[in-house]
Length: 217
Ligand code: DX5
Ligand code: ZN
Image (cartoon, rainbow, N blue to C red; front, side, top):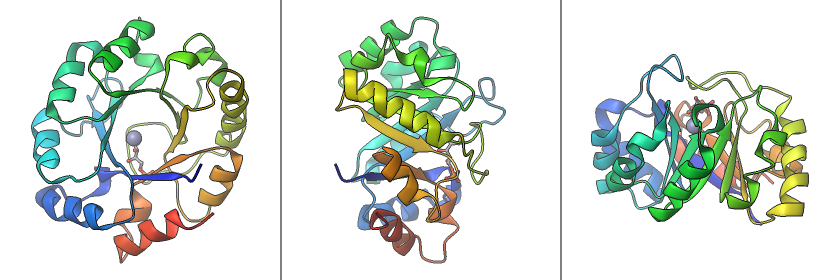
């Protein structure tokens, strides 16, 4: 499978999101990665429903919503109504993960589970068959433009092994510190969705940066 690119708008210009969303529409990016942070699960606060609704008005690509919030069950329906196409919750933030995943699917969204850098892939053993996507955090969540953690390659290999046995169609998404120096190695290791924030929005020409990341393998 060719890999997908999900540019993260966390580093976009929040005073003029319309321009950045229109840029992403014109680009070779596949999804639009939307990072929601609550200041509790992670030490940062980003944005909520109103901003996602505004983005949805302009976005011509699926919204890949990454919830870095505690107890996400409370808000799944509102995220769906705001325009989420896929919803990814954190393993570490869900007490009843099976219920949460089922609820996301009932809402008609792609269901994803994210794991922090210290959370082993093996903990997904009893949920992997129910998932559409696993997101491996390759930085500690909370901020853009952090340094990629090398142990991620080992985790991709673990997940690839697990998915081949139990759910070969699951998306393997990598989030944090992805750029043109590691994208090829990540895809070769088994990743099929790459998130990139800083590598896109700090580039002189974001459209070209997206194209480079798409054609790198
Ligand atoms: C980090 C977010 C990421 C972030 C990635 O908590 O989940 O999606 O935007 O940004 P870069 O690519 O800048 O590391
Ligand atoms: Zn993210």
